[in-house]
Image (cartoon, rainbow, N blue to C red; front, side, top):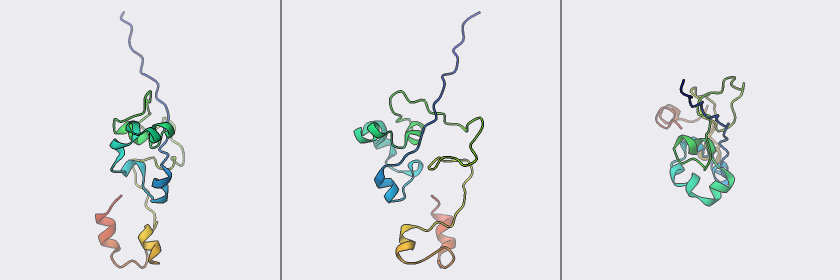
Length: 119
């Protein structure tokens, strides 16, 4: 009987954002420059910013083996910044809307924006 390779244990990885990303409401899993950052940027490496998203984009940090699928017993509330198969809808306003004192109930072009600008 040949020995079989046992699956390598995976680690839970965070999607902690940089201070700039937090201030600008940018999420790890939608950040367009993710492949240029991650393991290619010293500050990102030192802080493990967007660890899960880096792993999923194949620019993981050295030694990372993130659990990419849903956990066996998923938490009731998934960690912040973690993409899920289901999009939870909110009436969260954009920075522009807040600066212009507009909310989702009063925004005239809501139908156009929501359908065409999904994040």
